[in-house]
Length: 155
Length: 83
Image (cartoon, rainbow over all chains, first blue to last red; front, side, top):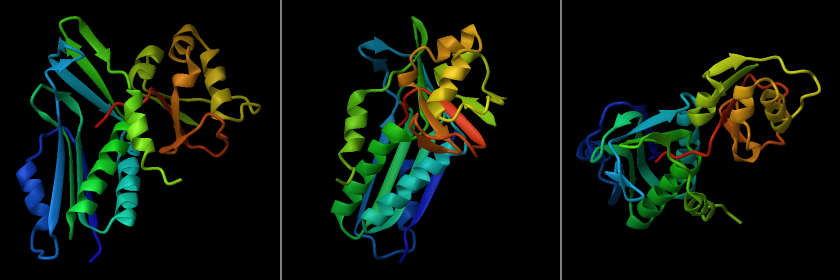
């Protein structure tokens, strides 16, 4: 059975349990589901933050996630794949991003989820702005996120 | 062609998008950055460190040596911080 990728970019929060249930609904061929959720921390570099605001490039963000979802499905035997990324203002403790991967066995599900998160961090067109007592500023990209994505590049 | 800006590039330039007609001798993304930066103070500030700027042509990431002819939409933005 061909895997279907569900990709959503939305302001609203998502229900992790509901997304996990949806990926396996009506199927008996799935033996492993891995989910990763990224959550807004209440501090950045030791400084408390009030909120994050996420901006994205509409059109390209969906296209870029879809390209990587298709690559994940070509590299691992996945039964299903869901990526949800929120945009707009998000306060500490709230969800930011969700990746759910389903496969017959755990290894493919774990690896595909990690691959997708590494690529979301380094090449999906989203930008975070943080609000704190000192005002608001754009969060800077981290070199280790680029390095994490680079390890999946085939040599 | 249409040009779009995101995050602090957008804020520094002071607009989210515009339509431009660069001269014919502007061939690559890197040359376009230099041309845009030379227009006014706000653009010069946005592109003051051209190596930091990332670009996309028609929704796909490109390097600064990419040729711009035929592009419908070019976007400029800082390194991404999603996920």
